[in-house]
Amino acid sequence: MIIRWPGVVPPNSESSEIIRDIDFFPTFAEITNTDVSSLELEGESFLPVLLSQASMPQRTLFWENRAGPTLRYAARE
Image 1: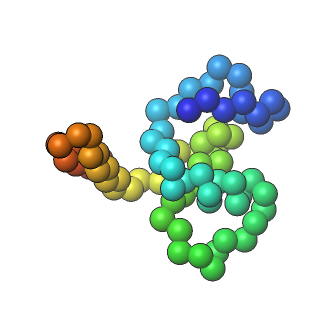
Image 2: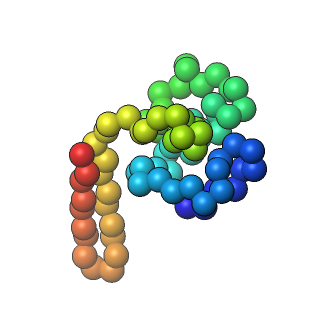
Image 3: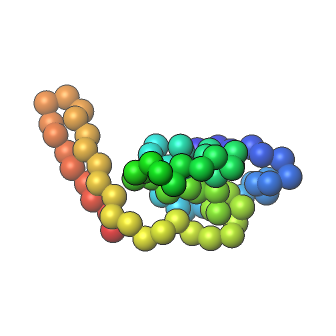
């Protein structure tokens, strides 16, 4: 993923954090100061990662890939 946010995200910065699609909504909500505390969201805001303030919280992630006739699963802890 490439992010350009002048004055916020340092140029040429890199991170090895795992960001999933479910993390975008909580991140955009935090950036726009939108209260989503009443929603049951599975994702986590990655704004602290963008700001180089913190890492993503420890969590178990699961993937399912249906490429052709083969079904593949992966988990990362």
